[in-house]
Length: 310
Image 1 (cartoon, rainbow, N blue to C red):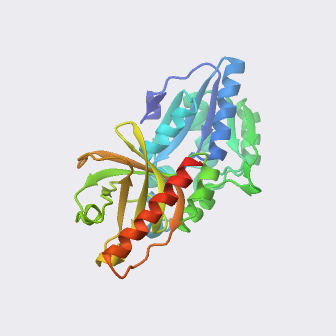
Image 2: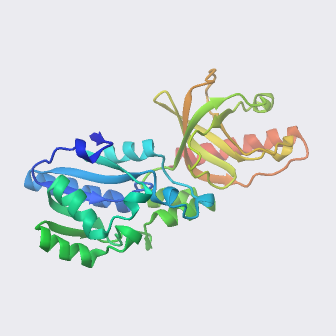
């Protein structure tokens, strides 16, 4: 997959099949769009082109920026898109000036003139252009005016729930990673750098890797203990993770800790990715470190049961 940080670097390809969006999460709805594009490209001998934006429009326009959190970082998003078989990704720098581009001007200037699409594929609720005024009806009219085919992918339902980034964020904020994973089509993942903690986990018999998250807008879901799969240097381990404030030891700082089963290596400074499978319990304050240690052993047994059956 080729990535372009400037649309002017892109050279038009034969039978370009194009889509546009922010694609936070690259969830099942987005994946359905990409699959249709890849299938269509095979049928007509074309290539697939995804147009996305960075920074996220809401960051630039300060829309609820205080509570703004994303399911995927830019790096994660590109990796997930690449897995779907897309050929080209064009990243348009989103600025306040760009936000004033009208819907028709965007289609004409950025898609028709720069990419020369054979087809444009969009989701069921796609809106675009200044103030998101552009809708499917306008796209249909523009497809006739500029001579490209238009396809709309219907909503993707999982257990009678229409998949959306908003619903996934709400599930994660409630700690329901099981539901979020179903809507995503993969396990929700947080990556970070292993940093030094207070070594309390080692004293309890459950050494943990403490993660520092570089991306400030990455969504950190509800506090609690989770069964997870943890990737270190390309190798995946079973484990469990705690997100919270460690009330038993009197911490006031939110931490993300991971305990890897059957693992004993010094990994400070390394990248670790935690893929969350299911929430085991709330975070509790225990009367003693011994009581906490007993609970952690119960958590380990439960986590193993979940992981071995998922």
